[in-house]
Image 1 (cartoon, rainbow, N blue to C red):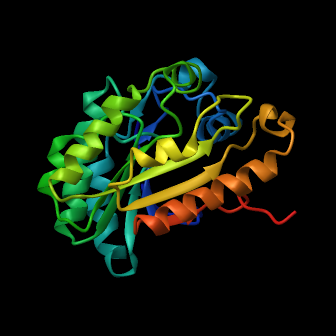
Image 2 (cartoon, rainbow, N blue to C red):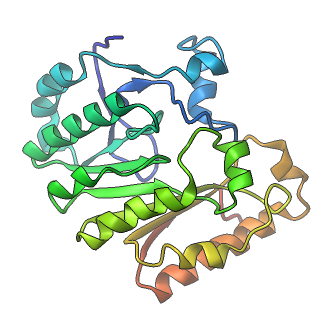
Length: 251
């Protein structure tokens, strides 16, 4: 597929600009996935199976070579990606294009952040140290992953790829979002946090659009307590953090 524009100002609270150079995502998250719901609503994909067949924007690099210089001075950072995955498991052509895009951003001195449920490639260590490489990690329960992130890479492999980059002096971050309530999966948040204590930044947010969340008694108290646990942990370990809007609410 081709597009006429690829570099967008994002409305996501911790983002600046974003590039989504793939339509669809083979990881097939069922939380449900907001990106899939929007793509289906606006007719970009027909159904879930269509969403699982990622399509590259073939003219992505040519577009960005024209767009980036025009907006270079106004860009604080560019995120890969908010509606797809830049390092999609089983799709090396997606990773290849993502690396080409990062190389282009690096050339213009623009900070890039990336987030994946796949493997962070070792090639990322070759870029400027201002960039930030992250993984999405809401659990270590493999049964949960197989149900809610069915075609993503397993958690230990995902975490190991980030740890390898950290050990090469790269900046890393973890998105613990959307974090599930105990009626979806029983787990110890503090234990999860302890396994990412080496990272530079943690983003934490609740699970939306899932009826099981509201069915859990005292779900807002649960998220308030979880958010406070994240804040306390990050302060204890000198980790930068961001708690997503609508996660902590005064009762």
